[in-house]
Image 1 (cartoon, rainbow over the protein chains, first blue to last red):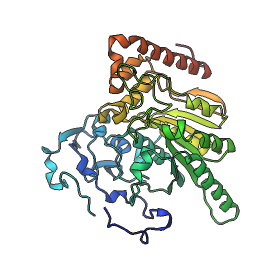
Image 2: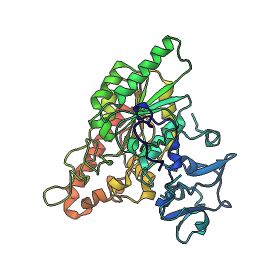
Image 3: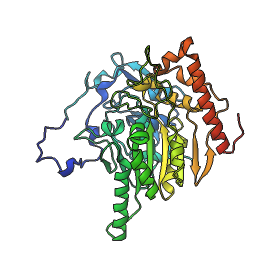
Image 4: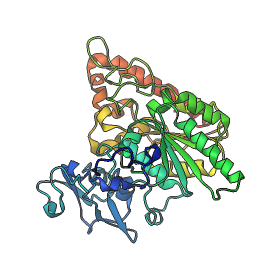
Length: 110
Length: 310
């Protein structure tokens, strides 16, 4: 959360001038299950990227390039719609990614 | 109009991560698909509702396009004002370039509270697209019934108990009400069929004048389904003909998808806990009534689209 602001610091009309700044807010701490992709099976159809409700799938040069675990809420839609079953959901506590996890409640501070 | 995902992936997604929609939200997928389908610069407005609340918790916004929220009842009126200002500035030579205008509203903000402002904006003929993400109740405030809530669905204001067995009424047919406005384009879509939804968005935005799209958008909290099934439950709504995919262009009806085998309505309701009471033997007559109504509306639609009955 940004520092508390007084009314003098807020733009007139309460507008938010920085488009898409919600990305600063990390929602990865909501996750119970973590998606894990097997790139050996993945056919880069990009359906997961298209349908991810949290805009959490990276695409580089037209290829599925992994997850933004800072924001992924672990809903499992990507695993569900994957036509070749290349994505599995693993319990967060057992997932290999403890190193890049931001902890139980995510990082709320910038 | 095929959608090429590899091409599309070169562009920035107009929605940012970090919005506060529930994990697996169906409505935010609808919003994302509509935004991604747009090719020209867009300006968006949303009625009060889930999508407005979760995307714009101050001081954050998940919109990477200009966005405005005003109130529950006036998304269409607000956007019609923006569109008028744009035309005025164009005329004065103070702005150039094509801009498209899209309003979003949930079923509460569209079927109920925002209906008069929507009707007004459409009648005045503003060049805008209104998209209703229909999650079939007031989900944002705790699952109260709306005029889109299905027959027999349990909500907090149409509960299931001794005296009540869910909503007593059938849902309002809003898409048809919008067709009755004689708009150049009206369509019904579902996010599980993203090709169809995105192609319809592109088509709508390519047509000048007022357009309306009604998109079923599951809410796993309100429908009581697992979050992974958000799209699957939409698919079943289409396969059971509860939510047919069709479009009406200048009064010409066209069915966009006809299930190879129409599923019984029980296939759609059995996975949803809001209909759990319907699976009890004593409530079978209500399932039969629900099926009858679905069949009646489906039959009507087939006739309007000039399709063979069945």
